[in-house]
Image (cartoon, rainbow, N blue to C red):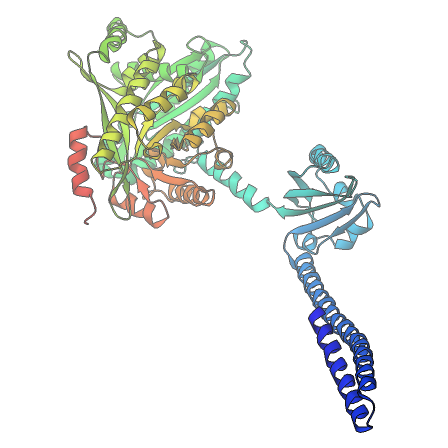
Amino acid sequence: MQLFRNAEILKYSLILGAITALYNILTNLHPYLIISATIAAVLVGGYFGAVIGKNKQLLAENKAKKAEIQENFDQLKQQQEDLNALFYNHSSWIWLIDVENQMMKVSAGIERMLGYDAEEFEKDYEFWLKKTYPADIEIVNKHYERLLNGTHSEAQWRIYHQDGRIIWIKVMGHPIKSENGKVVRLLGVANDLTKAIEMEKQLQQVSLTDFLTGLPNRLSFNKRMEEWLKVQTGKDSMVILYLNIDRLKVINDMLGFKAGDLVLQIIAHRLQAILRPSDYIARYGGDEFIIALPYTEKANVETFVHNMMAQLALPFELENQEMDVTVSAGMVLFPEHGTTLNSLMSKAGVALRQAKQRGKNTVRFYESEDEALVKRKLYIELALKKAIDADEFELYYQPKIDLSTKEVAGVEALLRWEHPALGFVSPAEFIPIAEESGQMLAIGKWVVQEAVSQARKWEEEGKPIKVAINVSNLQFEDPDFLNHLRCTIEQHGLPPHLLGVELTESMLQSIHTISPILFELQQMGIHTYIDDFGTGYSSLSMLKTLPIDFIKIDKSFIDEITDHSGYSTLVKTIIDMGKSLGFGLVAEGIETQGQADFLLKNGCTLGQGYVFAKPMSVQSFEEFYKLKEPLM
C-alpha cells in the first residue's frame, strides 16, 4: 500500500511540475523564476498525489475489508446451515441446556427417538426428568451433578417412550464455561441403546439354553449354583444329581443321531414332569443332565429318586421299535461333600463313575475314593516334585490355522508329562494335583522358560511363530508372575509379539485383580486370549473393557454348529459381536471340514482342531510346519 501511495505522489509531482515548467518557458519567464515555480509545482503535485493516493488506498482497503466481511458472512451462514441440518435432521438427540435461565433446546432427533414433540421438552425444563424411569433417577442426578461441577460425563439410563415403551439411552454431556470458569451451558447428545441391549440379552439367553431340549445348559446351571452358594449361611442343604444315559451311544450307532436326539428330548420331558418348582434341571453335556434339589429329609430325596428312575425306565418307541433306556446317577450333598461348585461337581463325577461301576441303571451317593486312587494321587504328588529336575515334562504344540489359506498362524503350547513308571499322565489328572499341592507355580515358570526359548529358536531359524501359553489363576495371583515373564523374554531376546497368554473365562470373575495384569501384558506387547469363551460367566460387553486381543470359541459350541441351527445362530452372533468389538476370533475343537467351512463363511478366520492337527512334539510340529509353509 505504501508503494501504491509513492507512485501517486511521483505521478502528480511530475505532471504538475512539467506543465508549470513548459508554461513558464513559453511565456519567456526568467530562468530563476522558472526553476522556483517548477519546484513549487512539484511540491504541490506531490501533496495532491499523496492525498489522491491515500484516498485510493482507503478505497482499496475498504473494498478488501468488505469482501472479507462478505466471505466471513458466507462462511458463517454455511456453518449455520450445516449446524441446523445436523441439529434438526440427525437421528441422535442433541440437547443444549442454559443453566442460568433453566431452558433446554433439543433437536428433532428426540421425536424420532422417544416420540415426544421437541416443544414438550423446551416448554418444561424438567420434562425429560419426569419421563425418566424412576429407578434410574439417581443415575441422572449424578450425571447432571458431574456436568455442573465442570467435568465431562457419560451415563446410560431408561426413559419412557411416548407410546409407553421403556427405551435405553446413552447420554454424553460436556459443560461450557464462561470466562470466569462458571458453567453456563451444557451441551450433549443422546443415542438409543435399546436394540444393542436387547441383542445382548438375547445372546445371554441363547448362551444359557440348550437348543435340543430347551432346558438350561451347563453355563446356566453353573451360574445359578454359584449365585446360590454365595448367599448360603450354613442352614440350607442341597442334593445334586449328576445323570448319564447308559446306552445313548448304542442308540446313535444303531439308529442314528436323530434317534439319539429324540431320546434326549424324551428324557428331558420326563424329568421336567416330576420336578417341583424349587428344583432346577439342566442339560450338562452330550448325554448328561444335572438336577439340584433343596434337601429337607432323606426320605423325600429317596422318593424323588425312586419316581425318577421309574419314569426313565418306561420303554421308548424309536423307529417303530420299543427300546429300554437306562440312566446312572451320582449324588452329592451340600455342604457335607463340598461348599464350592468345583468340589461338588468333582465328587458328583466320582459318584457317577461309582454308579456305573456297579452295573449302571443305579443311583449312588458319593463315597470316599478307594485306597488305590488315594495312593495314586499321593504317588503323583511326590513324583511331580522331581519331574522338572528329571526332565520329564515336555511341551507339545497344537497349530492355529488360518482357515482361508490353511497356513499356520501360530501355536498353543500344551504341557505333557511322561513318567518312567506311570507313562503318559493326563494333564486333567496331574494339573489339579499340582495346584492342590502348591507345585503349579514352579511348573508354570518351567512352561514359560521352555515356550519362550522354543519361540526364540524358531525366530532365529527364520520361522517367527506366535506361541501361546496357558496360565492358571494361581500364576496370575503370583506377585512374581509379570516380572518372571518380562525377565524371561529379555533373557532370550524374544520379540514380545511372538508370545501370547491364554487364560480361562472363569478367571475374569476377579476382574479387579486381573485387569491391571492384562493392561501390563498389553504394555509389554504380549497378546492375550480368553480360552473356552462361552463356558464362563463373562459377556462380550464386559470383555470390551479389558485389553483382550482374541477370544477362543469353546469346542462345545463348534461341535453342534452343523447339526443344530440354534448353535449355529449362537456362534454367528458371537463372531459378529466379537468382530464389532475389535476382538480376533479363534475356534477351538474343529473336527470336520464342514465346521471349518461354516466358520470361515461367517467371519472366523482362525481355528484349531483335530481336522488340522493334534498337539505334537517339537519335531513332529516342525515337519508339519514345513508342509504348511507358503510357496515363495
